[in-house]
Length: 191
Image 1 (cartoon, rainbow, N blue to C red):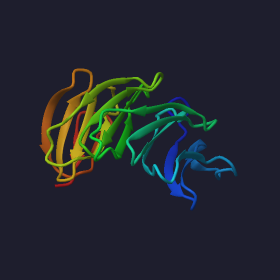
Image 2: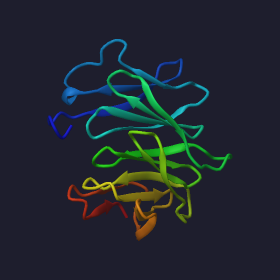
Image 3: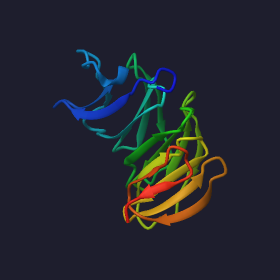
Image 4: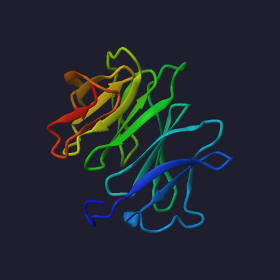
C-alpha cells in the first residue's frame, strides 16, 4: 500500500470444496482470521489467476472459463464480473495485472487476447490480440504508469504494449517471466 507502506499479498489455495482466495494485509504480520477467505470461483469454473491492487482494496481473480471477477478485498463482496472476447475453445485466464494507480486491470487468456478493464466500472476498455507464437502466459503493467504493459508467451517472446492506443512499442526475446525495474525503464528477463 503506497499510502501506509504496508505490504499486501494474495494467494490461491484449494479447500477441497472449491478454490478460495486469501488476502493477508498489514505487512503479512497477522494470521488470516477465520472467515476471511473470499470464495472466488466454484469448482466447475476453477481458479487460475489472482492479483491484488496496489492499494490492497481490490482483488481480481480469473478462471478457466474466462471469467474475471473484481472483489472488495475487505468485505469479500464481488464488485464486477467480466467476460471479454475469447475464443470459446480456450477462454482460460492465465494472468492478471493491475496498473500502478489501480485504475486498470489487464487480463490475459489462453487464446492470446489481452483485455484492459476499468476497475471502478468493470467496463472493457480495449482488447488486444498480440501476434505471439504461443498463448500469453504472463502480463504485467509498468510500475510507473497505466499505459505500458509487457506480455510474454510460452516461448519467451515478450511484447511491450501501449494499452491506451493498442500499439506494440517493442518486441523482446527472453523468458516467459519478466519484470520491470522500479522506475519502469528496464525489463529484466532470463535468456
